[in-house]
Length: 308
Image (tube, rainbow, N blue to C red; front, side, top):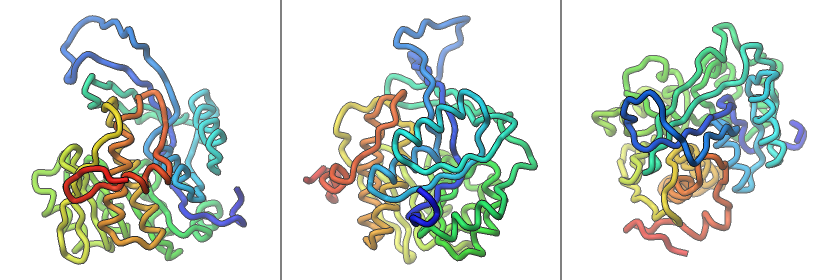
């Protein structure tokens, strides 16, 4: 896809590779060694990749922009996008493609170890590349990976609506604040928040957000819009839970699908709950995303049941 074809969503940053290690428990008790009978696998797919995959599976035109190394990890990312028909602009990253190790427990919980050496302080998205891609889009989803923070002023100049996912922000780390305050739609997890509602209201009052969504795992999610806080019940997973990695990315992609189709925020959040529940059933070494038909046939009702 070229810029002439139009873009529904430009996904900025978050391309990389994960090595998946199934472990018998989290936290993992200390031992000199563990035998991993189910295998250790490496696959492309970090937060930006998963959002792009989720949006594409729902029928949206997606373009992904990030820095990638000329290395085997970068080749995995390029292949993933090619296989799913997702346009990818990969700028050279001499430090190498982003990578992480995910320890995944039997209940689907995970511990991620990120290799921060795969970035340089001076990395930037060149304006002559970023501006036309952003201006051609209906929406830009900005991941919090480096160097996306430096791109925020240019993105705001374009006037294109922005979303971001703060992931497990504790509400205090200053790194996340520029993203929280610049975005029109803000997603985050309640994992590290002592008072999610207070943090959500602070984001809304200090920034541009018209909607703030805090995902809470098996408890569902919370939606703040127009000053009203609404609990979004969890959707029933369609199969046993195997891995929670990517659930937040799936939630964001499905919410954006509804948002770009003009649906009200609560309906968008219910789409997110269904997509997030589906993502938890996908094995850690795969990158399946919920389709539009499955999403529209599985919207959760107020009791959290799936209706089709």
